[in-house]
Image (cartoon, rainbow, N blue to C red; front, side, top):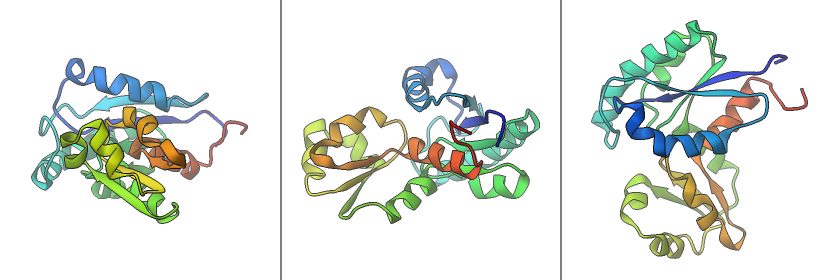
Length: 185
């Protein structure tokens, strides 16, 4: 890819930007890559949050519509900001740009990561203290975050030489690879 890529990071819920911006802005800053335009695009419809398969099903058609709109607006790819990957398969069938799900990206990364691997589910991430999480991963060589929005835990969990797989970071790297883009390029 010769020109700088434009990638839409799809927020698959109806939560308004003013509510999610404190959580999403640090992720966008952390994911920033020189020469890559990464824009957060809200579906603005569906469930307010995604914590169940029912929520994923409710979000899916709105993700597809948003990805379709992003393709029409000239985006080169889309990443869905949810490890449940709502609407990812359907969107791929509807558009000609790469569509990645944060969940599938982290699962793919786990396959080539050093064992033992511990996956911290969204429920565990939400219900555990920092000390409990550190104790939970003490034997791991790789820790996979089973939800998005937890990147602030990467430095905490990365002690003792552990690899920590953050779903959005992994998805962005896989996306850029699919687009054939590198910074030197």
